[in-house]
Length: 376
Image (cartoon, rainbow, N blue to C red; front, side):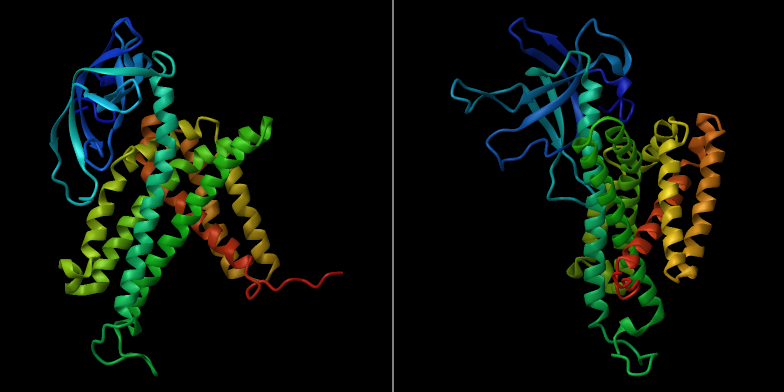
């Protein structure tokens, strides 16, 4: 809501019981992705609102489903619900996705879950959405890299600085730096997102203490996957414009569109600053257990890299791991607001260290880098 933003406790939309199992929802909502369109027969809106007489703050929120059209006796879209599209936003990018301002004027809605249990319902959806948005950033990073690489391999400019070069800008060291940065951003952000997804899947597939361990791991990785994935997408898209040079700043190449479209991902589903605060707040509330478990996994990768004769990779990764472990212990000893001051940098440090960890793990799985020992 305009007066609430990320402060859910400030939501003022109300849902009054009608006595027939439905509720009359009144209030205005903004930034509603796909809030109105003509691509489907009906649209089901999930709405956070307050039942009169409920607790204040987030504990008083409930979730309701309010369709654009009330289903008739056969389940087909019937009468129009009292939901008005006030406007569609004119955005920097993501123009294929309509973002609406919606006004609910006694709209009919049905309670989802328990009364006053809306925050639990919302966060179940939100945590899945955060991983999804992180993958949206990964996709943008990959797209920007592939488009920039193709352009760099065909764009000829100046003499080649390397012997036997192609004469394209891909021969130039600075262009290669940018291309390799794009590739590293795409690969590492994807690995973080996939590891998070595996952890959440394993939490559902396991039982007891093992399920709790996987759940804690997935919860810790979620804000990192969202924030680093979207930051990676934005940085890779920005580099893509730069690699295209002047052509990157005009519409024909499509490089500018990637940057416009991905820019919002660091804002929605909880800004990346909020993800960082969640990481050093809720996710370190276990006394650092989940963080230390991941740091131990990184330490094992360092040991394996040393065992297989790659001390240079091991030393770089160990240096990062030690710095991250020290930062973790430092934050654990600080008051919440002091933690928040360094939260964004901590999340970035964790993501980059994990990125190095995953890259070394991938190299260890490559037989060309780590030959298999003969069977005994």
